[in-house]
Image (cartoon, rainbow, N blue to C red; front, top):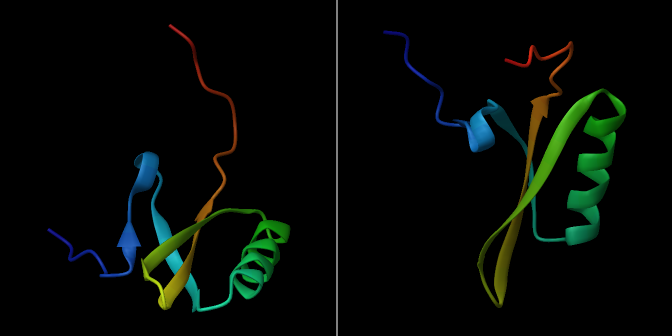
Length: 70
């Protein structure tokens, strides 16, 4: 069985990768916007507590195509 990289998670059944980490929410939003412009779906996750807060930016490929309904 192949080893899964530590920076790979599966929120909502969609594989995601950590693409940025910062202490500034504005910077995290800019990173997310750059990836969204390239066709990725992004999510910003707040980690830690005040006064030390880290914002992680996770990106995953947007699902393409049609889903077949039963």
